[in-house]
Length: 167
Image (tube, rainbow, N blue to C red; front, side, top):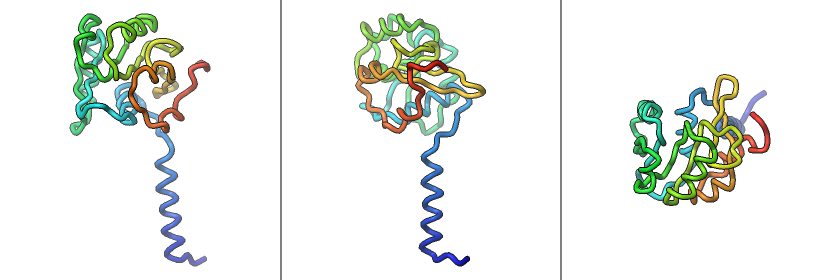
């Protein structure tokens, strides 16, 4: 069967377009976090990611940051959040209630929150990461996402598991 040039172009464009619409599973928490953040529209040119109470995680996130990344990464104690300019808060060792308390009392918005320790994702962080097989997946708390005042591309919302279902 002979294809015309236009048909071949159409097929190639279709293949390229379809491959860009599917999400590839990400195997580690650092790349999953950065992938989620890539869907955000930031109010500043250099968003600051504040890792809350976890110096080791902050260092690992820095180590996994691409060289052309716009992010500044720092570790913050609970008491430092109120006076910082965090655009992203990453929680890894607080309960969902502790996360929610910090978000309600210490955060200056806009600021997006991500947790690796909030499996239900009903309170606290906007994005909740969890281990699924050999990779990471996430849930979204829409109330916290709205509170964050950070615009997230709707395509990332379709990749999330609804918060009502269990991992």
